[in-house]
Image (cartoon, rainbow over all chains, first blue to last red; front, side, top):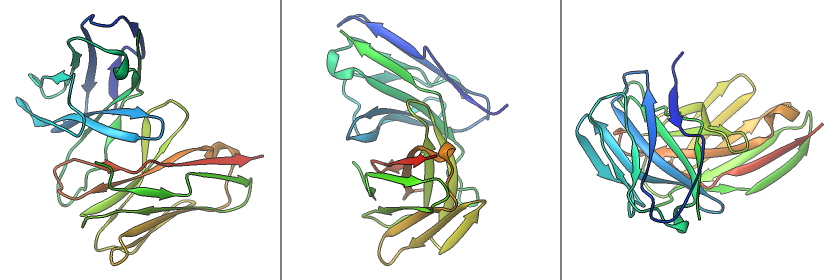
Length: 115
Length: 111
């Protein structure tokens, strides 16, 4: 089954304690991205990757890091989480192309609370 | 940056009625997509319409695109309680994979 898998689904952590949210896709997609979703602000892109070893900042990258060592995995790293990073996070993947468009597949989300 | 603006922000209808949601955007696009999100869950792709298309159908969904007005609409016909969800439009301007999402319309369908 084609899917994007995020872990964990729920996480409560304390300010400053480094954490990693994993994301894996089984569709051989080139493009992967992370979004955060906050009430009234919709989905905002944090970081994206167009292929292995190619990552770039999205619209709200401050306080986050990513890596893309393998095509299937795209972890999101919060080196020193702060309460303003409390949010619902989504990983997404797609295979861009003129003929295929860019339908994105989303993970089920990670609800992060930083206290 | 948020390109899409959706209207209305919230919509409540009775089962069997039609629901129409609108999306406006600012820059030229390659395609526009609609997604559905059940409460707190991941987004699910519904339909994609390319910039050279004006209308597209998928089951009870009908999407229109007016590039001259930079707007799109999603019509759900004969709505069901199970259609209760948030609906987002997303625009692709670069064919690189980057999507810019609107803030969504929350639809409630009452049984």
